[in-house]
Image (tube, rainbow, N blue to C red; front, side, top):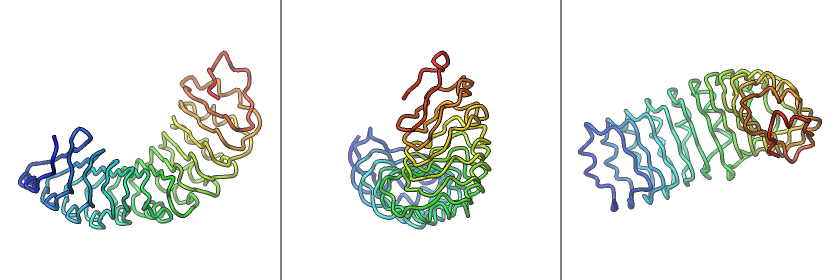
Length: 284
């Protein structure tokens, strides 16, 4: 299928609930402003398509919208501030698109999933503060951008997001240390701080995150010994990435107790592996 999205799509406004436009459709042109008349729309996915232009301000009229995803498209410019009117929006994902995300998004109290990947127009120094202040029900927070702007520290207030299950701050130019308040996020199953400039030691409070299955602090400047608690307290761990850091000493033998462990990466550190060949196949 090829061509453009016809403005007559607005005639479905009383019944259409979901639209997915992906790479299987050779659609071009722009998003018609008539999209704002699709008042029953709950889900909109624009992925790997050739649609150009910007997102029309009429998106603010989609009061029923719960999920919005914009991925790998030539769509550019500013996501309109009217997105702050979408009080039912619970899931927002934008990735690999030249879009600026307005601060109004981070003030939606019902937001449960916020994923932003590789958007060069992000104002990184404001995102976390606004998210922590306004979206306490957030369950998934994933921010990654090698082209992000001002370097920043992970605020201690992040411990207030107690409903979080997935936290990714990847390639985000974070610096400073890992705040001990992360230990308050007891529902976390995945923690990814890969590719920042975080330094210091791992706070002991991190070892209280007993639901973790993914632990990734690779490619930072963390140092100190690898405490046994990482392995015997966090018994659900399946993936551990501590590579490219300044850790020293020996991998504790308690790692052999992680029966579900699939990957342990610790290359480019000063860590030594004990004789655990009977327990593990090392990936180094």
